[in-house]
Length: 281
Ligand code: AMP
Image 1 (cartoon, rainbow, N blue to C red):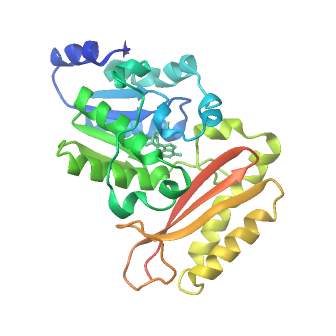
Image 2 (image 1 turned 120 degrees about the vertical axis):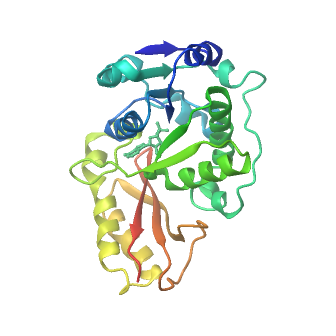
């Protein structure tokens, strides 16, 4: 395993190597969801480059940033099976933000207007700023992102196209715990009661998907809120059904179109997001 804290040292190391590089950007507190991306990158590239950086500009809440879980020693341990082809990049703020720790402004049209774009002010400008810096500084051949953050994945594809960066962006399926909860670093912040309650989110999404074609969007929304909020610890922040290509929320489903449900739920002080693709009607 090769660990670098500056992109210039990392680039000069890579210049001496041959073969393709697959980048997996993360904020650390790694779990099996992250490792599935690492595994995929390891299968398709000579080198896997995992970045571990909690990006300040994508947090719109200082407290959320301060309490974001961190455990570098455990992260490195989880990555040891990939030892031989693994490069870990753990920069300081100044390596990615040499001038000031500010988000740039981007225009992703409808992709960034709704869901996380509407509920987390400036979030995607922050995400795009750090991903642009990672892409330009590290110049990977491929980059791997989870469908857990489906809106982010679509925005990064748009960023890569807009800036002509020529990186192949690969989306990877959501990895879930046995009880259905989407794996997330934030799950560590849940207390026992919140953790026990959280599986209802995915269970309800599945029930809605099973009734696709019979239930309209309004009823889906009503059903989700009722089912989830029956639990005292869970409060729904949003429920949307949006077109996959544009990420514009809809209230009616057209035949032969691809739609996906997007939800955000507060479990106590922890904010959980999830998404599920709807079958075509
Ligand atoms: P994060 O560290 O939360 O910024 O996530 C880093 C990458 O891992 C992002 O591309 C996420 O979408 C992806 N990821 C996080 N959780 C999961 C999961 N449960 N399944 C698949 N990918 C995930």
